[in-house]
Amino acid sequence: MTTNTPSDTPINPLAAVKAQREALKNFYKLKQTEDTSNNTPNPTNDDTKSITSSHKNSIDDLIDSFKIEDIEEFINTESYINILKTEDKVLDKLNSAKSDIKSIIYNNYYELIKINSVLEGLILPNDNSVHLDNISNNLTTIRSNIKNIASINTDIFNDLNNK
Image 1: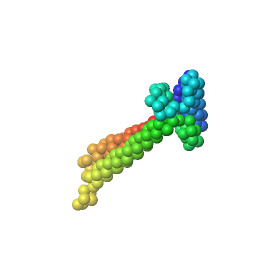
Image 2: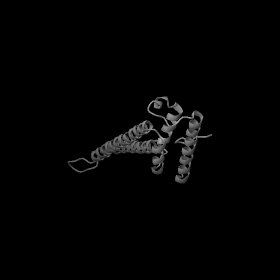
Image 3: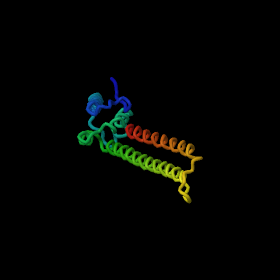
Image 4: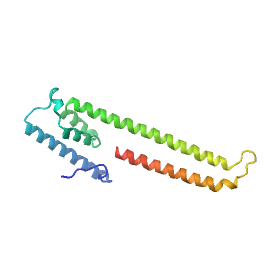
């Protein structure tokens, strides 16, 4: 049995949805197998401490694969403790993503300010003449700043896709 990891998921949205549905089916098959082998009802407050680590791991794996229509089924089949744990994890990921976005915006703004100051340095304020001696140094600085911005943008989108 193969499992899809975020790096293995196909780029095609339709294929991604199919892979997520298959992962859900596999998860619920495993859960049904555990339930039938234990011959016990859904966990109660006393039983929640005995949740297996594989079940916890499968919940972690499912956080990324949930769709709106799957949430109702998850709420109906899981104990409230698992639902609360999942909610906490989702909120942590959401807050982390928001923090990353704010950081990226700040970094891009900072890089823009640096480029602006370099460009302002090209023109002398008193006589509006171009300072030719430093143009090549300034252009090198601009190129490195643009490369930094491009790498930050790549990091942003890779991080968001992995979350």
